Length: 202
Ligand code: 5GP
Image 1 (tube, rainbow, N blue to C red):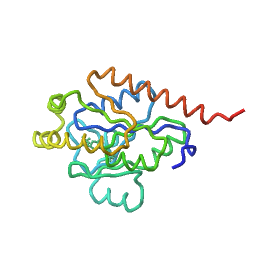
Image 2: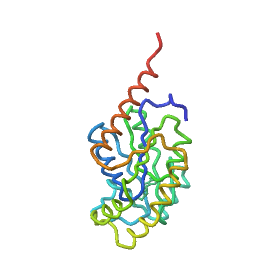
Image 3: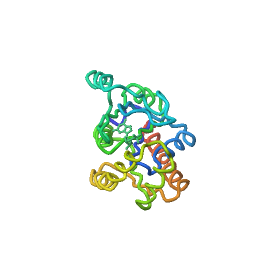
Image 4: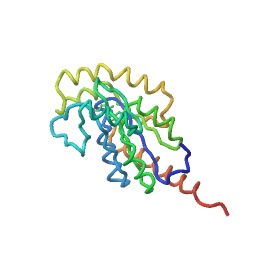
């Protein structure tokens, strides 16, 4: 998609389960007034998750209908379930000049990278693999078998993401506040750059 078709900025955040992506995304909403895209998924809601806020929880049939109707900007299978970003709300917010944040996996990120040449792509990494296990266990959202599966896949996921070549920035979440500051600084710089690019030349 041409970089001049919308005034907003699309931001992609990826990383293994438990790395702190959701906390970082919410900080971008607070600090930058960004709009967080609510993904559709066929995975069951975890404890404390709300339909329409954390995700749109859909049946496999509902998800397929959206797919057939061409409603997804990107979609992927992750840990045996379907996940996808609905095009409508994202494009509306970009047209309105907003910063839009997608928290998606590397397969989805690759699709966005191909379609949006101005999207800013961030890969979040843990300082050490043990920190993922600590975070997944303390957030108490997932069953033990789910946590074990996610940890087992984390190394491969990170390798695949690094090799995808679609990320502009790799951020190590050693200190949450520092990681957020780094991302906020980069996004502010990008926003300013794109505003300057769009200003008429005199
Ligand atoms: P979780 O089940 O922990 O909420 O998410 C599992 C994985 O799916 C995470 O890596 C998350 O970033 C990814 N994910 C969430 N929503 C989407 C989406 O709309 N598209 C894609 N491709 N991945 C998503």
